Amino acid sequence: MGHAMVTGDVMTTPSRSTRDLEFTSWLTAREPALQRTAHLLTGDVHSAQDLVQTTLAKLYLKWEHVRNAGNVDAYARKVLVNEYRTAWRRPLRRAEKVVELVPDVPAPEPPAYDGSHEAVWRFVCSLPPKQRAVVVLRFYEELTEAEIADLMGISIGTVKSQSSRAIATLRAQLPDHPEISGEETER
Amino acid sequence: MTTEDQLTRSLHEVTEHTDYPTTPLATVVRRAGVVRGRRRRTTALAAAAAVAVVVAPAAVRLNRSPGTSSGPTVAPSTATSSPTASTSLPTSLADLPFGRAPGIDYLDGHTYLDMNGGRIQDPALTTATSATPVRDGLLFAVPRADPGLADLWVHTTNGDQRLGCGRDRFAMSDDGVVSAYWVTDSCSPGSAGRLYEGTDNTMGEGGPGFVRTPAGVLIDPVGLQTEAVVVNAWHGQDPTAELIDIGTGAATPLSALRVVSGSDENHRVVSGELAGQPVSQVGESAVVDATTGSVVWRTDWQLGQFSTDGRYVVGLSSAGDTYAVFDAVTGRKVAELPLATSGWITQVAWDFNDTLLAVVDDGSGHTAIVRFGLDGQVTRATPVRQQENASVDVFRLATRP
Image (cartoon, rainbow over all chains, first blue to last red; front, side, top):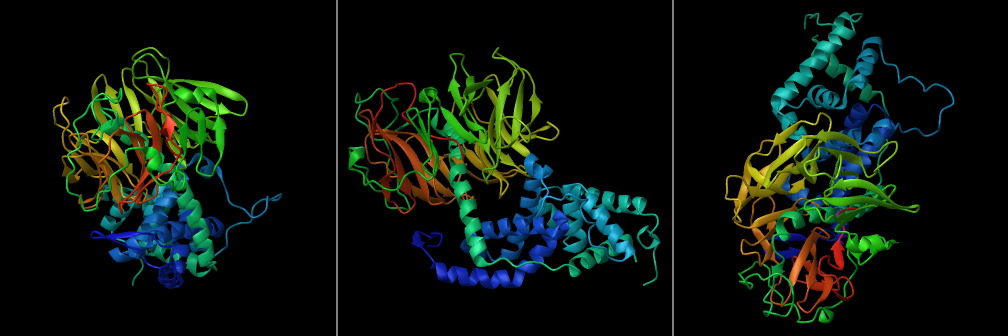
């Protein structure tokens, strides 16, 4: 049975099958984008999958409400980012690293991309959660500062400072990569 | 290429070189069940705040004949028009149709019943005013003779362990994972204290962290917002509504409100009594944006907690005789609880997103937990008990998961 909806004074309950069809349709189209963003936030695919599943579950519970409001993608992104930040806030999660097997050898290195990309990826993974979320939303999702501020519940000034701090640190920490150390190349 | 462009390009490179799994609908539904279960349990915690601010001043008197009970005397119901057809409660609670058990934990005498059917029995729970499960057992509060303070205990399989003095108000995050409570350094009046926040655990590794709170201030946690605990800080008789950053301990006043009574973490709003009103009067309440501090809407009803999905907020009429449910976004009144009965309500908490639970005394010393649906349906969720202890209700809607 679906969630009861109050429309005016009338209670209506959409059928489960209708809701599931709609949700599945959205899921097929939009889950890859959520997985990608979650990967960039968490730093590994397994944690990202866990984060996405929780996000999808919360979206599923509020599907009619969110769908009727016409902002499913924005809502899903908001839940994803808030879940990420909340999970970081929890002490148990903070210390937790999701692995399939308990390793008896050092953990494998993250996938290597070409030199500069790998260096940037390592840098992003080293950022504190709030700054990392700002970086991912600003430079991957390409949201505006105002959109990020609204999504994360922080001021635009905080978005700006977190973002500029990240860029400054990136330049400072990676002097061996001139293409990312602030030197402009001709377009 | 600028540093910013390079960052964008690198992030895209990472995702383009990674294969991602897909999530079957069955997995989503299963996970949703887990989330929903946590929420049901969490919702009662909302009740504690609502009870603290909305109910405590006076139990609701529902057309009760004078002299039939030792309960508080309040004006009779003024049965106002409601979008939802009001259903009269029968004179006897036993005549109510018996429905499903509460979807949230509750106390019945000395027994703690969780929503999954689990039971904890402890004679000390008989006088507990609030309780919440924690990883190591059950955290509960028993009021002390000193006004304003309670003894906080943890019940475990090894017995009861006293944590110290504190307040009998707990708060919980919307997903039921992060809890907050306040403990004083000593039981002396005016002692400084510690506000704890963390996973539902009271001790040991992974337990909550805490921030210091100054001497002379009592802290009532009400809810959680991102990285902060929503509290009422009592400076003597004067409360201030605040957000306390659990990382730094910094307190940010919610200056629009004098007392905060509800918190919705997902939508970043809080409810409470507006500031700048005479303390001696029941004034206007409002829903306030927790990020900006701006008033979203206001009403002359006393607002309490939000439903788990944040869609509704419960309110008590300024006369203290009628509960209603409001759309949390617009402030439109959605439903009123049926009130045409004798007796009173001593506690209200959200059950599911469209049902409320209330501890009802029928005016003759009989009490039960009653479920009110926004569609006007009323059922009884527990057996009817005889109210034997004048100071503590037989039924108490347990605060949180």
